[in-house]
Length: 236
Image 1: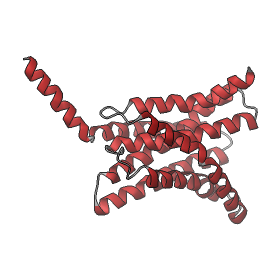
Image 2: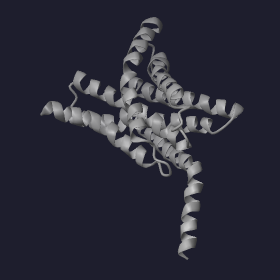
Image 3: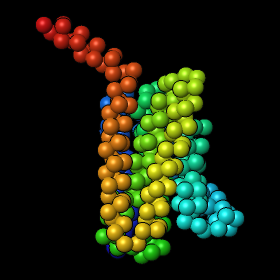
């Protein structure tokens, strides 16, 4: 019974957040099987992430800046970006800017979920501890995914230098903020909450704005509005 409770508490935040982002796709819902496929890819990539991180730690040492920005954030965000770019970026289902956010949060939440499960059993975490992790690491991964997906969506529907610029942003910005997040938690032992709460509030505020702007740029938005207007004209 305790095993089931801990497993449920570890998995529930990722599923709940993925449902939230899926339902925020306002104009052209993605196939659920595609979203779940990318979510489970997040499970799979944790093994190569751990291998590469271990190798870099042995090679570069365990300095606070190197660990936060390169070994932790760098490897995790780079591998998520690599998988998204090669498996989703040119996929036919990626047909509106918000899709970038949905698929990036799916792979990020898949990664965060399996990370949460491993942590919960390795550390024998309580349900209260997992609640805190839902508000911080799992939520944090979701926001890094929103950032990555937003700029990947901008790149997908831009051309030339503009597209390459947004692709660079889609990797570098989540990597930077993930590094800041990890550095705070690893190096500020007292009053860390005074730093992490404003950072999370900033990320959520920016993330919600990015979701709104991505939906607003959907090519299906105009089609839906035209259809509604036509129906209203027929009714009148």
